Amino acid sequence: MTRTVPIAAAFVAALTAAAYSVAGSSPSISSTSIAGANRGLTTAAYKRLLGGPSHLEAAKDGSLTGFEQPEGWTRLVFPKRKLQIYFNGGVKSVVVTTWNKAYKTAAGIGPCSTVEQLKKAYGRKIRPSTFNTQQGNVYVYTMGDLLFAAANLTDVTAIGLYDSKAPGASRKGGSLSYAGFVILADQISCS
Image 1 (tube, rainbow, N blue to C red):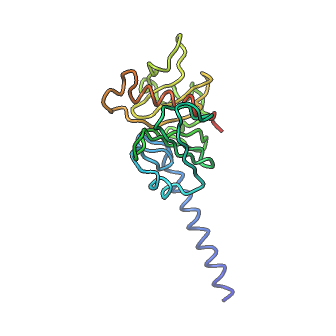
Image 2: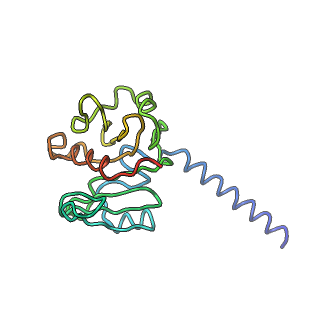
Image 3: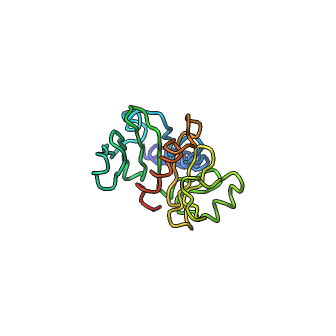
Protein backbone atom coordinates (compact mmCIF):
# COMPACT_ATOMS: atom_id res chain seq x y z
CA MET A 1 0.00 0.00 0.00
CA THR A 2 2.86 2.39 0.73
CA ARG A 3 4.13 2.05 -2.84
CA THR A 4 0.68 2.77 -4.33
CA VAL A 5 0.37 6.18 -2.70
CA PRO A 6 3.64 7.63 -4.11
CA ILE A 7 2.87 6.21 -7.57
CA ALA A 8 -0.68 7.64 -7.49
CA ALA A 9 0.66 11.00 -6.29
CA ALA A 10 3.23 11.05 -9.10
CA PHE A 11 0.51 10.18 -11.64
CA VAL A 12 -1.77 13.01 -10.39
CA ALA A 13 1.15 15.46 -10.48
CA ALA A 14 1.96 14.44 -14.08
CA LEU A 15 -1.67 14.88 -15.14
CA THR A 16 -1.84 18.31 -13.48
CA ALA A 17 1.37 19.42 -15.21
CA ALA A 18 0.04 18.19 -18.56
CA ALA A 19 -3.23 20.06 -18.03
CA TYR A 20 -1.37 23.29 -17.27
CA SER A 21 0.83 22.76 -20.31
CA VAL A 22 -2.17 22.31 -22.61
CA ALA A 23 -4.03 25.25 -21.06
CA GLY A 24 -0.97 27.45 -21.46
CA SER A 25 -0.69 26.61 -25.16
CA SER A 26 -4.03 28.08 -26.20
CA PRO A 27 -4.80 31.79 -25.97
CA SER A 28 -7.42 32.91 -23.47
CA ILE A 29 -8.42 35.74 -25.84
CA SER A 30 -9.34 34.90 -29.43
CA SER A 31 -11.44 36.45 -32.16
CA THR A 32 -14.46 34.57 -30.80
CA SER A 33 -14.03 34.35 -27.02
CA ILE A 34 -12.45 35.72 -23.86
CA ALA A 35 -11.65 33.11 -21.19
CA GLY A 36 -13.88 30.70 -23.11
CA ALA A 37 -16.85 33.10 -23.03
CA ASN A 38 -18.34 33.74 -26.47
CA ARG A 39 -20.93 36.39 -27.25
CA GLY A 40 -24.53 35.28 -27.64
CA LEU A 41 -24.91 33.10 -24.56
CA THR A 42 -27.44 33.45 -21.75
CA THR A 43 -26.72 34.45 -18.15
CA ALA A 44 -27.22 30.84 -17.03
CA ALA A 45 -24.81 29.56 -19.68
CA TYR A 46 -22.08 31.98 -18.56
CA LYS A 47 -22.56 30.99 -14.92
CA ARG A 48 -22.17 27.31 -15.84
CA LEU A 49 -19.15 28.05 -18.03
CA LEU A 50 -17.29 30.44 -15.73
CA GLY A 51 -18.49 29.43 -12.27
CA GLY A 52 -18.76 31.92 -9.44
CA PRO A 53 -18.82 34.29 -7.90
CA SER A 54 -20.84 36.52 -10.17
CA HIS A 55 -23.59 39.09 -9.90
CA LEU A 56 -26.04 40.67 -12.32
CA GLU A 57 -26.45 44.45 -12.49
CA ALA A 58 -29.27 46.28 -14.24
CA ALA A 59 -28.75 49.78 -15.59
CA LYS A 60 -31.31 52.29 -14.49
CA ASP A 61 -30.88 54.95 -17.15
CA GLY A 62 -27.55 56.05 -15.72
CA SER A 63 -28.56 56.04 -12.05
CA LEU A 64 -26.50 52.99 -11.01
CA THR A 65 -23.06 54.24 -10.02
CA GLY A 66 -20.36 52.71 -12.21
CA PHE A 67 -22.88 51.32 -14.68
CA GLU A 68 -24.15 54.26 -16.65
CA GLN A 69 -25.81 52.48 -19.53
CA PRO A 70 -29.15 52.94 -21.25
CA GLU A 71 -32.20 51.59 -19.48
CA GLY A 72 -32.79 47.94 -20.25
CA TRP A 73 -29.11 47.02 -20.37
CA THR A 74 -27.68 44.55 -17.87
CA ARG A 75 -24.24 43.19 -17.19
CA LEU A 76 -23.04 39.99 -15.59
CA VAL A 77 -19.90 40.62 -13.53
CA PHE A 78 -17.31 38.00 -12.60
CA PRO A 79 -15.10 40.01 -10.21
CA LYS A 80 -12.45 37.34 -9.57
CA ARG A 81 -12.05 36.68 -13.29
CA LYS A 82 -12.13 40.45 -14.02
CA LEU A 83 -14.67 39.80 -16.75
CA GLN A 84 -17.98 41.48 -17.61
CA ILE A 85 -20.68 40.45 -20.04
CA TYR A 86 -23.26 42.92 -21.38
CA PHE A 87 -26.83 42.30 -22.49
CA ASN A 88 -28.94 44.77 -24.49
CA GLY A 89 -32.44 44.15 -23.18
CA GLY A 90 -32.35 40.55 -24.37
CA VAL A 91 -31.36 37.20 -23.03
CA LYS A 92 -28.21 36.82 -25.15
CA SER A 93 -25.05 38.83 -24.62
CA VAL A 94 -23.66 41.40 -27.07
CA VAL A 95 -20.30 42.42 -25.52
CA VAL A 96 -17.71 40.53 -23.42
CA THR A 97 -14.90 42.50 -21.75
CA THR A 98 -11.91 41.91 -19.49
CA TRP A 99 -9.18 43.84 -17.72
CA ASN A 100 -7.43 40.68 -16.44
CA LYS A 101 -3.73 40.78 -17.38
CA ALA A 102 -3.56 36.98 -17.21
CA TYR A 103 -5.72 36.72 -20.36
CA LYS A 104 -3.76 37.04 -23.60
CA THR A 105 -4.10 36.62 -27.35
CA ALA A 106 -1.98 34.14 -29.32
CA ALA A 107 0.47 37.01 -29.92
CA GLY A 108 0.81 37.55 -26.16
CA ILE A 109 -1.23 40.77 -26.01
CA GLY A 110 -3.55 41.32 -23.06
CA PRO A 111 -4.60 43.98 -20.61
CA CYS A 112 -1.46 45.74 -19.30
CA SER A 113 0.44 45.22 -22.59
CA THR A 114 1.66 48.49 -24.04
CA VAL A 115 0.12 50.05 -27.14
CA GLU A 116 3.60 49.78 -28.67
CA GLN A 117 3.52 45.99 -28.10
CA LEU A 118 0.00 45.85 -29.59
CA LYS A 119 1.14 47.68 -32.72
CA LYS A 120 4.26 45.55 -33.05
CA ALA A 121 2.26 42.32 -32.69
CA TYR A 122 -0.54 43.20 -35.11
CA GLY A 123 0.74 45.99 -37.36
CA ARG A 124 -1.83 47.04 -39.94
CA LYS A 125 -4.37 44.50 -38.69
CA ILE A 126 -5.40 46.91 -35.93
CA ARG A 127 -7.27 50.10 -36.72
CA PRO A 128 -8.27 53.11 -34.63
CA SER A 129 -11.95 53.10 -33.71
CA THR A 130 -13.59 56.09 -35.38
CA PHE A 131 -15.81 56.63 -32.35
CA ASN A 132 -12.96 56.49 -29.86
CA THR A 133 -10.40 58.72 -31.56
CA GLN A 134 -10.38 62.34 -30.45
CA GLN A 135 -8.01 65.06 -31.56
CA GLY A 136 -5.66 62.44 -32.97
CA ASN A 137 -5.61 60.40 -29.73
CA VAL A 138 -6.69 56.78 -30.16
CA TYR A 139 -8.46 55.36 -27.11
CA VAL A 140 -9.71 52.12 -28.73
CA TYR A 141 -8.20 49.96 -31.48
CA THR A 142 -10.18 47.35 -33.42
CA MET A 143 -9.19 44.09 -35.04
CA GLY A 144 -12.15 42.15 -36.36
CA ASP A 145 -14.46 41.51 -33.39
CA LEU A 146 -11.79 42.47 -30.81
CA LEU A 147 -11.40 45.87 -29.20
CA PHE A 148 -8.26 47.00 -27.40
CA ALA A 149 -8.89 49.93 -25.05
CA ALA A 150 -6.05 52.34 -24.35
CA ALA A 151 -7.69 54.67 -21.84
CA ASN A 152 -4.35 56.18 -20.85
CA LEU A 153 -3.07 56.16 -24.48
CA THR A 154 0.04 54.09 -23.61
CA ASP A 155 -1.29 50.76 -22.29
CA VAL A 156 -3.99 48.27 -23.24
CA THR A 157 -6.32 48.82 -20.30
CA ALA A 158 -9.05 46.34 -21.32
CA ILE A 159 -10.01 44.04 -24.18
CA GLY A 160 -13.52 43.50 -25.51
CA LEU A 161 -15.36 41.25 -27.91
CA TYR A 162 -18.28 42.61 -29.95
CA ASP A 163 -20.08 41.89 -33.23
CA SER A 164 -18.30 43.77 -36.02
CA LYS A 165 -20.67 42.24 -38.59
CA ALA A 166 -23.92 43.35 -36.92
CA PRO A 167 -26.17 45.47 -39.13
CA GLY A 168 -25.01 49.09 -38.83
CA ALA A 169 -22.03 48.09 -36.67
CA SER A 170 -19.88 51.00 -37.88
CA ARG A 171 -22.60 53.64 -37.76
CA LYS A 172 -23.28 55.97 -34.84
CA GLY A 173 -25.29 54.00 -32.29
CA GLY A 174 -24.12 50.68 -33.78
CA SER A 175 -22.29 47.89 -32.02
CA LEU A 176 -18.82 49.45 -32.45
CA SER A 177 -19.74 52.79 -30.90
CA TYR A 178 -21.47 51.10 -27.98
CA ALA A 179 -18.74 48.50 -27.37
CA GLY A 180 -16.07 51.23 -27.49
CA PHE A 181 -18.04 53.24 -24.94
CA VAL A 182 -18.48 50.21 -22.65
CA ILE A 183 -14.84 49.18 -22.72
CA LEU A 184 -13.72 52.69 -21.79
CA ALA A 185 -16.48 53.79 -19.41
CA ASP A 186 -17.14 50.70 -17.34
CA GLN A 187 -13.81 48.96 -17.15
CA ILE A 188 -11.29 49.02 -14.36
CA SER A 189 -7.80 49.46 -15.74
CA CYS A 190 -5.79 46.29 -16.21
CA SER A 191 -4.75 44.42 -13.11
